[in-house]
Image (tube, rainbow over all chains, first blue to last red; front, side, top):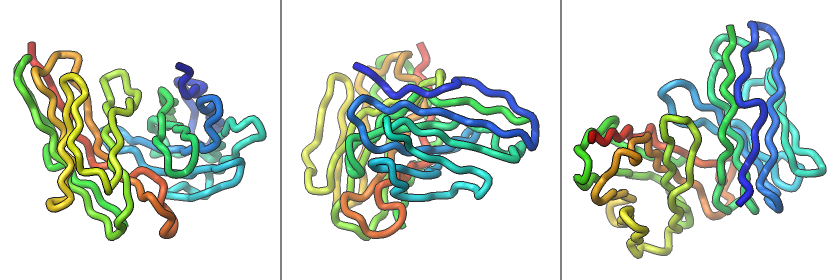
Length: 112
Length: 119
């Protein structure tokens, strides 16, 4: 079965640079969630989209923005990167807001 | 706000032993969902199970079983005859079943339990 696709899988950036993470949900899933997982931590919710509209917002820094496009894929844009942004970023998708979230493999971001 | 507590930070067992991972949750809502996810060393998050708050039946899937008790707000996970491939961090999580404000549908995770199965 098709799974959630995230790209890139690994990313190295310098401080103050920008990064764009992409997420392609499972086919026919209309809801996308973004989570950030620091080393040794549990995943923390950043933001979610349902039917291309923002549905909820968590602890997402103002330096980050995201959107969901007409084909339901989503992009997380991160600007003015800081060392503390180094983490594993997960995208999850579901077939509706109350349904099970299936996670992608994650993008490992390292900020130097 | 919702809260999930996994009191066991790390557990080590010898292969073929049974092991139970504890999960206690807090929520004021009556409709909610409980989940278990597995995160192996490779890093991905793998969905294992979802239960809704109205279904307290225990569930068994192969060597995995789950015990949901609303009276104690617990959703424990047992692995029978553990194997080395079970070594991973296991997360218990909760989301709400009805909209009751910001954050209703996000997953609130516990801190995770790192399980090491020794051959």
